[in-house]
Amino acid sequence: MELVAGVADEEPVRAKTNPGEALTELAGTTAILTSKDYETLALNTPGLRVARVKVLANFNPKLCTITLPGEVTIIVEAQPAPRTAFPDAVPTPPSEGFLNTIRNSLESRRIVTTNLHVIGPQYIEVSVSCRVYLKKRIAESSERANIERAIHEFLDPVFGGPGANGWQFGRSIFPSEISQQLTRVNGVDFVTSVAVNGQMTGTPLTLPYNGLPTSGTHHLTIVAFENREQHSSSRVGEKSCG
Image (cartoon, rainbow, N blue to C red):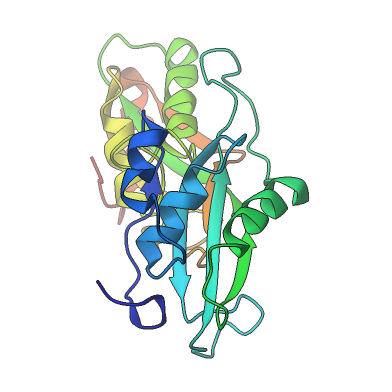
């Protein structure tokens, strides 16, 4: 295994159902040597509910453009309240106490020449605008809530994303993926003109290295099947993303 100073970035580690099992291979070790070690230990910090961890080797968050051997940045996301109980809960960054607990837990295991930085995610509000065309006999009044819910669930930082298992830190938001999610709503026929945060139609939204999306205010033009004719002139030049 490679040392932290030279290891490449890996996929973020998610919580395991058995924390004790995750720590078995580290039992008896005196120092953390790899990104995987940091991820596993941070994820299983005693007394905390950590949803996701990512380690950036040779990286200092205050000097983002410089590669600095010996600097290790650990991005952590706190486990939110259960979605079933709090479906509309807004994600909140981990507290300083949360971050300090993880940092203190790792400090005693790090190599002396390693400088640790433990930070939380930067939540970016994402607002979607698009035109949604409904199938026959589907009422706009009843379908709007389903469409908005699909967007909200897709942009959930912990439970959303293309695979419905959370977003990776810093992953871009692609309008084509939003369109795919909306076309899975039962009453939706196809979707056009998907834009994110006021950018040009079809342009991905780039997030910072520790960025995660949250659902913002969405601007939806919903066209019932019976009203397509009157919208046909405004569709000239549009591209269907369904």
